[in-house]
Amino acid sequence: MAINYDTLMSLKAEGQEFSYGDRETMLYALGIGFGRDPMDEKELPFVYEKNLKTVPTLATVIAWGAGAIGDSGINYAMVVHGEQKLKLYKPLPVAAKITTDSRVVGAWDKGEGKGAIIVTETNIAEKGGDKLCTLTSTIFARGDGGFGGPREGAPAPHTLPDRAPDMSIDAQTLPDQALLYRLSGDRNPLHSDPEFAKAVGFPKPILHGLCTYGTCCRAIISDVLNYDPTQITGFDVRFSAPVFPGDTVTVDVWKDKDVISFRARVKERDAVVINNGKCTLKG
Image (tube, rainbow, N blue to C red; front, top):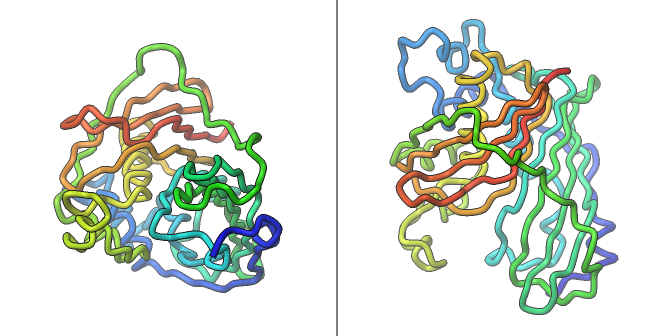
């Protein structure tokens, strides 16, 4: 079924309810690499219920499956995650009942055989309480170009500074990391099933893009923010290449007042896997 532009732009889902507890908060932190050294007193609060802290990028999994993009008509076998943005209005609680309002906010036609760009927005609030965050997600539907939508006007990514990075942080992923991270919500077999991965063109299962996203956040929290995640009010990236479990992800960082710009590279292949990163801090 081909995309119908008017139908796509009308898609929304309001008042969906979800909940998460400290178990999910700790599992997510373990899935992006916190707690590798159980004796590290700075990392322990992310993976132990005593004085538990939340990682801001936890927001991407607490309402997994929210929205109505499944009714869009796109070919999901040809979809890749293009960009992820997060805006936080307050630090995430360690456990909460939440509601979500989701809608499609933009769609751009790259042309027949060139794919489509679709942007969705999800607002998450505590049930009966404060707004927590806004997630903006861009998908590249490789098989759905030529539907007649606008060609120009897609959002431009954050521009990295034109100077050498102020620092570079090595973040090691583990061979079993995708198997652990998938327990936070994304059960796509591309990240767990070797036969499925080969069938869609990969030599083996790849790490979730949002796991790499969280890994970058972990690196910035630990090496730039002295383990204080409450400083972060925004976290935006563009995905540019896959990571395989076990890769070393090197995060290049530029610090300019309340904006941390970053990109991530895989050392072994010299491939940029996340680009145009922007971590916004409290002013």
